[in-house]
Image (cartoon, rainbow, N blue to C red; front, side):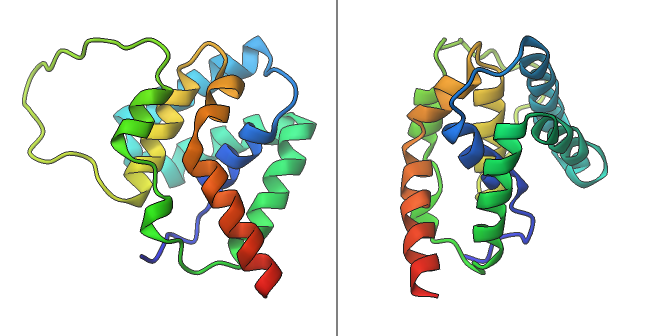
Length: 156
């Protein structure tokens, strides 16, 4: 699978998982806004949402340092194996409060699949949590991805 050259979301999730301090209330609120926009308008990623997420990252020194570390590692990789994608079950397990979903209006013809959609779903789930910096630590696929990055970067 060839990934999009924009590894912002992956680097953010990896950096958030490494965060040792809690996010501020303001940052948590900003993350919820990013999640809402990503959920309702994913095509606005390049024009609007990405910049808002980067502003959150850059404003937090620890998060920013870790983000830059992972971003530099991800830039060296052209392809990330499909088995490193989060599964639907894994994304669901990240949601601390199982909510009953009620479908209104027209039902989607297909489910969101693929690399960017799965990562967007992870960001949306984690960002809507009360303590996103704790929920992200439960994401097993990120640990696998860290191992893959370590192996890839040591081999090159």
